[in-house]
Image (tube, rainbow, N blue to C red; front, side):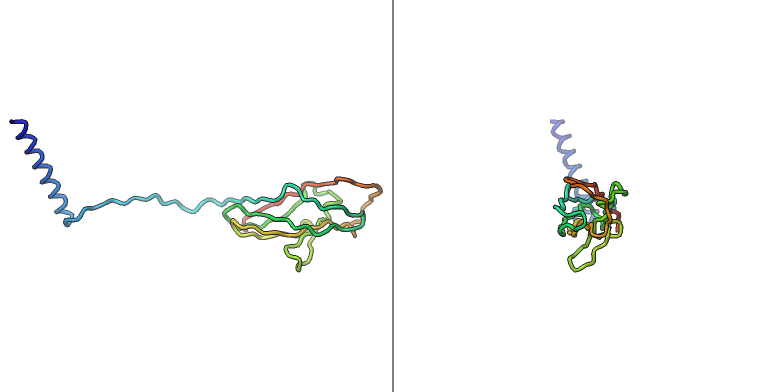
Length: 155
């Protein structure tokens, strides 16, 4: 019986304490809200370009067809992209010419860039123009190629 009396007394005390807490907060329950707020993400510069661009067949003193090249900005900032030859002394592919749209004027490798907004994609055109290259080509050159890196910097 004594244990029952202690339990009942304890329950009355706990209930009274709860009534006091509710009464002291204006009679309304209170919740605590919490959130984790993060600052802006670090600049992420990342682009996707094709692994290979085939320019087709052309004569030693001719030019290739205009080729459309798609490029994706998969980063989170606007970028300016400039194509550059990996081997800057390449006599053939230093004659690559670029335009953004067909109504633009062609600009030679090293003098052309394109701006692309964050998480967007775009395209440009490229051609190989050997008309005024003055190259000493005496034989067929099948499969001649060069690597072009696309340098992207935050715009």
